[in-house]
Length: 596
Image 1 (spheres, rainbow, N blue to C red):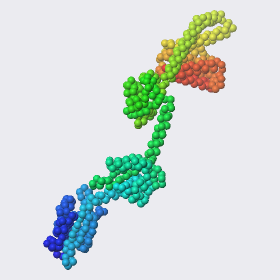
Image 2: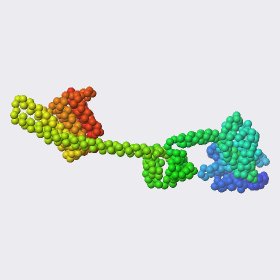
Image 3: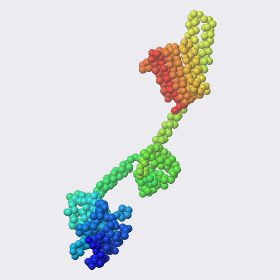
Image 4: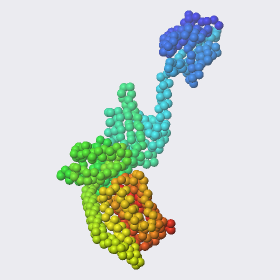
């Protein structure tokens, strides 16, 4: 096949067509040389950042729509030259920098000479990139119309339906086939008067859009609340060519709003009926609600009528400037930042009263319930004063008892004991067998009398250290029971102070335990173990005498001793435990040396 020259092509009448065509045209001869192109073809090549190729061997790569690269045999020009194929509107794309694509619609025809031989091919290309983009956009929008829950309705300039989306079918119950071409009044039945419809149309014409909520009715007559947006569509000359409506079902929202209003009404009724004052403030401490009881308290404080309008929206610190910087402000600010509800009592200076506060923080601010507890606080204060007065009276009574014991002890010592001592001396000087028995009785009475005097003369506020008084007590009890081995066990850290009245009561409990063991249990061995610190004592008195059943009533004398020990322990708020069996009795005492 001989290559065709440009003169021959021109003779075929193509030259004028190629140069004036509104599309990109290239002419390729049978040898693959590009022998002619028009300006649009060169512009298209320049957009690819290349120069017009001289032949097919240097042609720019093209790709199928699915992304596969064209093989040489697949090129439209090659197919027309080699097989005479007529190619009509075949689409492919060129690869642009950064992954972009230039979409081309191509047609290619072979050129034959008089003998029917293929001498050239004419390649016609049209840039369809923008059309492809528009098709993709429309496809995307169509997908949105099919998937959106909202109803999308398009109308022409006369308000006849032109588009009825799947969402509109679901919302109103009409299919697209039933409504397309029908007037909107026939299918979108709205609870609007003719005057209201006219206002909507006027607003759309003047402002380009209208938005509002209306009651509509489905095909089956069921009501549905709709949020409706209507937009005017205008042509190139600005005239309205149609309307686009977006309908959203807001029935659930309307019901929720109605329930919320009803709930708010119930809450308001409750807040107005409670006996507490109630206020609510936002995050900036502005009042958002004040119930009637709180208003009445404000009126009493201001000594004039106060309305909600005066309070709502104002800052709490503006209404009560006197509490800024006080404990009231600090406690309320702490409550605002707390994770949970808080309760506290405080004195409120502006109204000169004690209030009990329950504060509930939330994301929107702080809800505060409060009540006047001044009467209760006064009663509690009076009770505390009465308790203090009773404690003072008890101390005075105990002081009087101690003084009386001391007086009795002195009288016994100065008169009875001295007389008994003289009788013992006389009896000892003129002893006989009968006098020996009397002498023994008198000696026993003397020991008992000395013990009683010791117990009576123990001063509650003595200055002697507790450890000294403890040893003296054990010595006296040991002297009282010459046939019993009384042992005292202490540690080096035994408290060195006197501890006043509390130490005296501890010593009396120990003394009672020793007396019980000696007098009633006939013990042969008694061990007193005392340990502790400056603030707390641990005492244990153990004997090997006759035990008793603590669950049953002990003997009268023994029972009186136990009751006295328990009473003294109760006064000290101490722990006293008495356990007894055939092997003996153990008394344990745990006591704080400082009142709690």
